[in-house]
Length: 347
Ligand code: DAH
Image 1 (cartoon, rainbow, N blue to C red):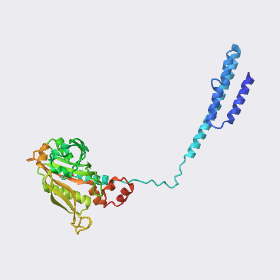
Image 2: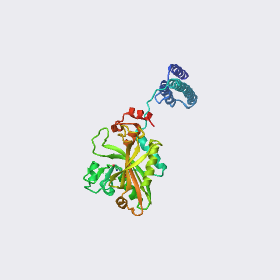
Image 3: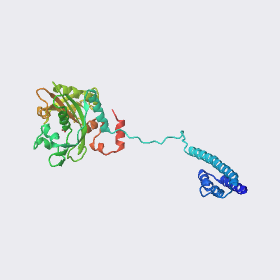
Image 4: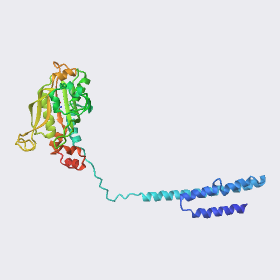
């Protein structure tokens, strides 16, 4: 029996010496020490021995198992280390290699201009609010003092979604209404709302069926047109430089009285006259005015106590002026090169 064990050991050792990796050692372990392996066979054989023989044989068998197991463990350790070292060597990073030049995007110009405007207004205590793009006719028109059938609706060729009640908002002005209604008619309001608006316009260099506006509203006691002028002056100087001058021209909107167009002095020719300002020296940047008493009343504010001003900038127009872009479609063509060019031209 001893010889049999000895032969088994030798066979095992020669096979173990031939292994080259962890997988082979594990296979060998199953082969010799597994259920169907020779060591187990010997254990079965032991059952038939006499008790006095069993003792000696049992010891031999245990020694054999221990020896095989410890040799296998040593090989497992060796191969594991080897494989780890190989892996580490193959994954080594050469930090001296030149880096791949990954192209980096640039912030969207519209996003940038909106953020700039938001920052100026936030520094003056305004909240930035949001409103739905799918809007009810009542907020987009009626409560803004534009009843059904009023000709002022024609200027805003609207996308209706459901009969005459649900639409894609044609302006951000409905957010004024929502904000005032929420404020409840007895608290001051200071908000701006940048957002998308939609009109049934054919797209060309100066029109887009989807564009962005930045709406603003301030309601408090004793608010006058001069407050609007002062506020507009601050924002114009922040956006277009300290030497920027501002003026108001009379205009007409249903939801403001009086209404104005707000102009800035042309930053290209400094008022002398050029193609950008069409030789007038002035560039129009927003519509604005004092909130109409009907609008205040519609939102629960008593016009005898409360007054306010509102304005609406076209975000694309601001960006086009500031970055010298002459086609509104530039913003919606998702061409990375455009953003990068304008990023460098940042003023
Ligand atoms: N909603 C107007 C438009 O889309 C712009 C506007 C004008 C907004 C005057 C205002 C405002 O808040 O007071 O043409």
